Amino acid sequence: MPALGQGFQIPRARRTLGATTYNVFAGVHPLPRAAETQIAPETAGVSRLRDPIRRVSVLLVPACCRRATLGPGWGTLGACFRRLADELRGIDAAFGRYFLSETPVSMMQTPSIAGHGVPGRPSLAGGRQVRRAIQDARAGLPVIIRGAASLVVLPAETANEAGLAAFAGAATGPGMILLSPLRAASVLQQPVAVSQQPGAVAALRLPAQGLTPACLLGLADPTAPQDGAALAETTPPPLAAAAILLAKMAKLLPAMLVAAASGDAPASLLAVAGDDVLAYPAIADASLVRVAEAVVPVAEAADARLVAFRPADGGLEHYALLIGRPEEAAAPLVRIHSECFTGDVLGSLRCDCGPQLHQAMRRMTAEGAGVLLYMAQEGRGIGLVNKLRAYALQDRGLDTLDANRALGWAADERSFAPAATMLSALGVTRIRLLTNNPDKMAQLAAHGIEVTARVSHAIAANGVNDAYLETKARRFGHMLE
Image (cartoon, rainbow, N blue to C red; front, side):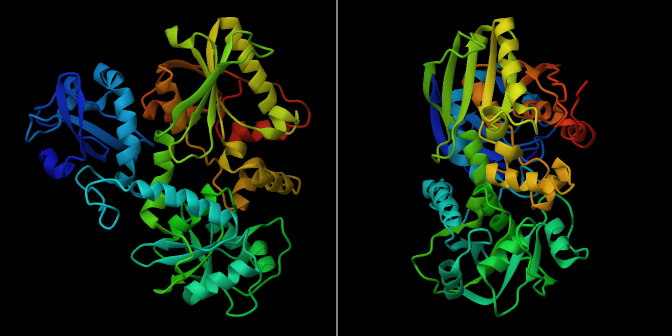
């Protein structure tokens, strides 16, 4: 087994905890099943982020150890990690973004961080640039994505005449539009060559003349008028995944007008590193901190507190409603509830969200304690505007899964990593989960939360949402017994 200096490269920082000074290393799971034991789990900590395939690790090693290897006990989270959780969360937020990849990476293949700030140290400006790029994308402004083959990108949904002019001024060579493979096949009215696997991106060559905002919107949005422009499939550029992710993070349709960026692109256009874009979701997931809390009695629970969490980038807040004293319970009831304006506020009959929300609070009150996490993940992560588009497609005959995919989204875009971060911050790491969704259980377990039991949370159909509930059971695998 190679030394940490080879597997994790150089220490990223130092932390003094108690009487011991630790070197901080960062790397990527999977960890080995067995190795020579020189550092025991009791003297360091591992923080797991993201998912079972790509997990950022932060490793604290006593500074007195010049060379060390990982022992077989690293497969579990021990008491030491729970003791160091607060410190590790801060380290994760600072260092995690350099150690993510779109493909599984072994701990011996740390991605290069050349060109991003001081070598071996995080560039705090990277996250801020991504947040600004998201805002520019929503405003219809082109953005430069830097990489080996830099791109100028413009969201098809928000493109306007001024944005197209700015895009043309920063581009060199022909433009293309990036779409999901399913949306591209629909536009072409024939199968596309790229994989239909999650995360795949298709590229279509655009005509040299006559490109208008209405034409781009029609290519992106199946609910908008279609103009039947003549297009042909082409090879996606290396930064295609970063471009589509930027659109998704802006809660825009995942359709991007892109072209090779000119070397003398206007300085007025914001530039962001492609690696920073790809790493951004994990940073936001791991960097949630408590920013406010207050006693908020609600109709279903008089003894309730509301805690607000905000990511370090200043993005969307998530909330935790604590009923009773769940932090003192052995395994309190926990519900992860994605916000639903139509169901929670308007009482929409198209879904079961509103009844699930209120029933969860009643059950926690009956038990005397519980945590309801209210996540800013409207429409399974696609946002309210796109959910309305999906409803329009459902009215044309698609089910909830196919409607999302027809718009270019995955069936479920949510990550439950922020929920795990919130539970850890609340001191609630051993729970009973109120859910019908097996993916929630799997993701929480992958992020260090012990789920001791699943508690069913079925709501009866109301005559309007019958097909919706049937789709959740048949195609999403929800357990609606």
